Length: 308
Image (tube, rainbow, N blue to C red):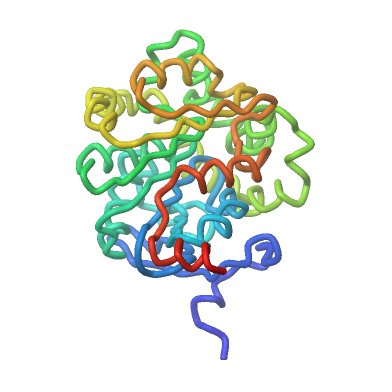
């Protein structure tokens, strides 16, 4: 008998590349898709994606981490296999509220947090609220401050959030067809097969405006929320952290990493040369190994692994 939820899986989904069991949790804004792999007891790792992707971007690291941990990867509303309500705001603040609901409904009391891209502005506010619940933090090419403070990045953000940006997002799918490939250090790593798993989720021009352009506009519009997050940096700095950074990222260049170093001088840093904005896509083995070595493991699973 086919599970009623599995019937929701779209035909474009590559089940060979993404073989994990799909699950959904009901929130006040809509149904959120997630995968939940590994032992159900012990250490929990929550993987939070950015834009314009979905949990598919973590497919290489999930099996490695799930050997000794419970690994949960969510799709924000509007992304991947989650619902796409028309009346949702699709701002980082709104996504953050939904993620809080997901954490509460899944009863995740303590967890390690891995964030990438917009996953930082979405998930880190929750860590700042309750830092005692976060066992460790990993930041993959992300930020937690108003981008308008940097003239060069502010200029790019103004374009993305303008009427011209809206046009480019709607009719040319700029986020996925222009910005995404340009942020790879090695564009050959974004194969047509991989790219299709991201493109297929946004076939409709209106959806690109509703979901993707909303976050582009928030690059500057969400400055007050990002300023509050930056003000909470000392609370986050108490948490063991790893900055895992692709140095070939054209969207968030090395100067962004330099600011992270300043904010979190105690953090462990691993730089990946020749790797761009999606380190876990371009150097999956290196990233999976770094995460596996840094993140806490479930003690029972660790013993089992050692005696295997």
